[in-house]
Length: 480
Image (cartoon, rainbow, N blue to C red; front, side, top):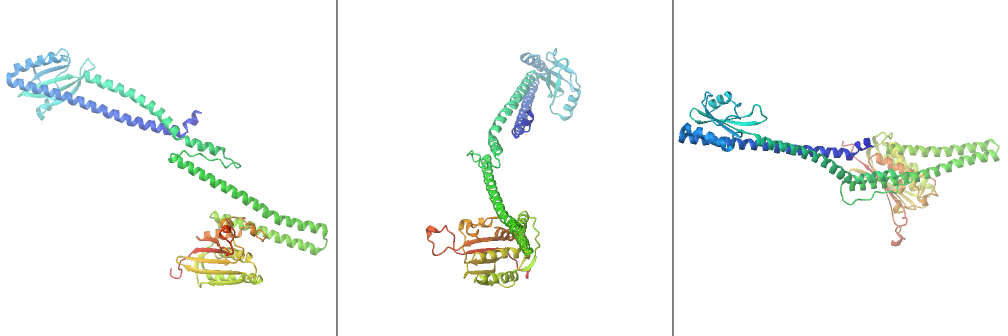
């Protein structure tokens, strides 16, 4: 349980939050501490300089005798353990001082005197009073020609103040760490409560239950957007699973029919027929049905590999106009058998980079559908032309048409509208055509003309005739 808590985002964020808050608070306290130390030292130095100024004034007025008296009076007034005064010559010889019983171990610093004599400016130093835990701030300063004042102030009060400051700092830091950890944990747990809800919903989702959704918080924050994204993902997954189920049902249906036929041929031949010719007919029918199954499987493989980016496409420069003319010539006899008027308007010498075999397959599927679903005495038109940076191929028929709600569904694998189920087919032709065209960086679209006999109230019904439009990218290869 503890290991799981340590590995949670809430724990790591709390650790970061506590660490950053503690560091910021620590830096703030340290800055305040050094500011307090600097302020205390500055005030102490100024007090020492003020004392030196007094001695300079007294010496000018009353001489050294007045200075001796001032030293005694000032020390007694402030406290002999608080402050002391010495008057010394530049050689370090003491000739006057306040009561020094407490300060007897504080000697005149020859280093400070030398520095004072050389720089001619006051010298400060902080010393440890021997045999005590106290510190003192010492000043060496000229108060008269050849007269140096050594005066010092005990730092006992200031040390106690700084010690109290340190204790407050340690206590405050402990409180800040505990407070920041607890408050951070609660706030982060509250902020991440939506994630827990999403996780719980995800855990409850199974293959048979994809209807669960996470309720939005309504705060329009990152978690709310995460909830929206998660629910959208579930919608797409549910739609995908439904399409997979539908496709599986269609595959089962399309596989069942030829397999049933094969079995029926074999059973009838074995039970009722005994001559060799009947066996040959059975074998021929079996081969035909097997070819249909193999063609369907191969088509599925081509679509799947192309959509996965693993298709075996060989792109090279081709003459699209010639390819379409050859395909039209191939399907012209089928149109003649149904007395369909076959009109071709193909711009000459359209050169593109493409896989000619794959593109032939896609165009053949579209042309085959147009002829298949156009009744006798109808019309099929093929129009090919260049416009701007693309090539447009239009295949227009006067067939049964397609209802608008099926414009996208007909490109799904194995999908067949009710009106087309009476005709032979696997429901893979349009899906294959769009996949191939999209691999060429183009696309396939469909529209259907509304019959003039339909009223506005019946506009949701299928139209009369369909128009399939193929658009492919085009560059002028001759110029390039």
